[in-house]
Image (cartoon, rainbow, N blue to C red; front, side):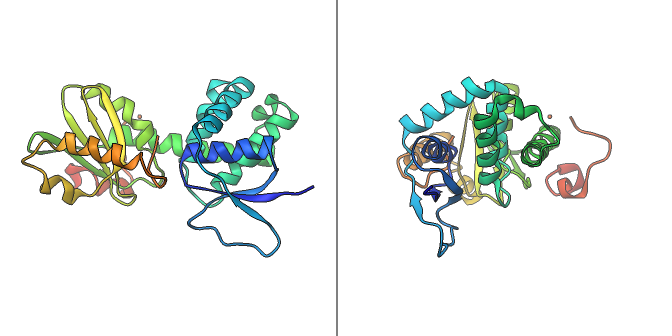
Length: 244
């Protein structure tokens, strides 16, 4: 049987398109982001474009076969962004599709265990950062810088956009150079550099952020789309005003 590596653009939609190709076209030996892929002498490879009809189809199939909860955990696993994240997802979904959705509950199975561990770590950090984010006033905006290990901004957006509905807030993931921009109960995750904030401080900065977002969704390399404890680990302290 012919198999190949699938390369994608780094977006969740792109990953779903690779899963689509795996099940409906040629089985995948692996899924990789194309900008870091190292070509093998043995495995053929193919670049998979992000097409809405394929990603929507695969998203619906995941929800139909595995349910809303497991589908949301697949997205959480995608945000893990460590090592073989895409192939943890590929092996997990392949197992559940071929042997039955019940396998998602076989937590001692090595494939399921690897998936569960990635999801657990992302959920845990998401939960903690909801309590650890601290804002400073920058003109009419509330700004916070964070340094999460995992890409948690899409997961905390709903909480902060709802809690600070009357404010304009920016939560900046410094290492990834992206930010959560929220206003009037809506939020976006967009490319961001803090110098942008000072540069446009006297203008309508949120209009500029939204324009930046729509500029980026037009190109293929876009960045698409919880309680504080008494002990605060050192890795979180640089982002808390009370420790500065």
